[in-house]
Image (cartoon, rainbow, N blue to C red):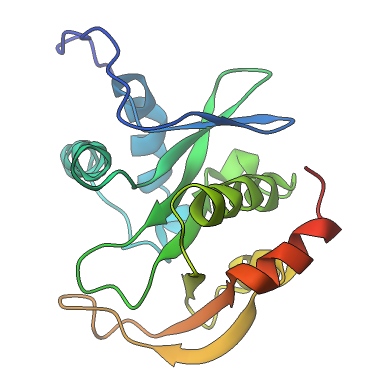
Length: 194
């Protein structure tokens, strides 16, 4: 997959860049497209985030996420591995229209799972959501059978608050709303590495 057909404009900062020990989190860029399309073509990694999508749809998704940053000052970060610069997933401080709350949601490329990256990225994103965006609560919309994401939420100190509802056209997807308050995060954050 190539992005050569698109002229790469001078970088426009759509939002902040966050750094952790092993990761860089920044708004999406054109160069993320090949790995993001590969990620969304994998039935296992796409299973809980809308299912497999063809490359043209993924392109529109990346543009939508970039637009969310431009319009609202929040969206999904691309997660890059510091050591390699490789795109390994996405994580958001986001609140789409009609969503059941302000969410920090994550999903990783298959080759990045099992390394603690989701917890590391989520902790940095939750710090940003509470400290910079001023959120009072964070949720995670997790399908009941998505045990790996439930484990990440548990490590973060979030609790399962029970079933939730997504807006149309996603209203038939079963989710549990996990989450915590700003005060709970102040306590739970101390258990995680900075």
